[in-house]
Image (tube, rainbow, N blue to C red; front, side):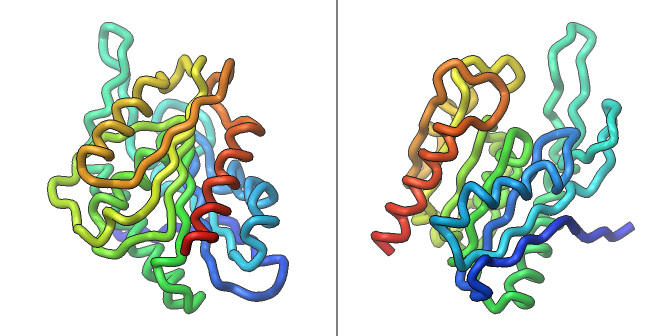
Length: 222
């Protein structure tokens, strides 16, 4: 059965549209969970339209939210993230969603900024590795790199990436950001990382300030 992504949208405060920001929520959440983050970016990106789609599947481990891919628990209590089929399916849906927004908004993909949290960060990194068009920037909170994509288009290597993580995260260990940073850098990406002191699995004010500094610097150098 074919599906398409949908979720809340927030228009730019100026009425103009020269940037598109898409938020990708974590496991068990939904688009409403992150659309409020737009308030943290409107001063830096006043001409941006903000999208926050729901993941395509209902969460399997309980709750009322959605999942980009299933997370299964092994007999020893550890988590099994081996869900290549579902991840690939979500990447396809995300790419279709981006293509549709590009048509509707008239904004080129090169002016799209993808922002993810946790499982959403994993998905935007996989989308970047598989897509044949560069983005304006990627910002990933509390995630990691699954790295199922085998071919990486050279066009994407100039997409700047910022990875942000709490150094007290008990859900997705901060080491996953260190591993992602090293792997992305070895592939040739321009990637930065920032750790929020004392933060668990979440998004903090200092992390959002760092994200805005990153975007302002990116806009200035464009």
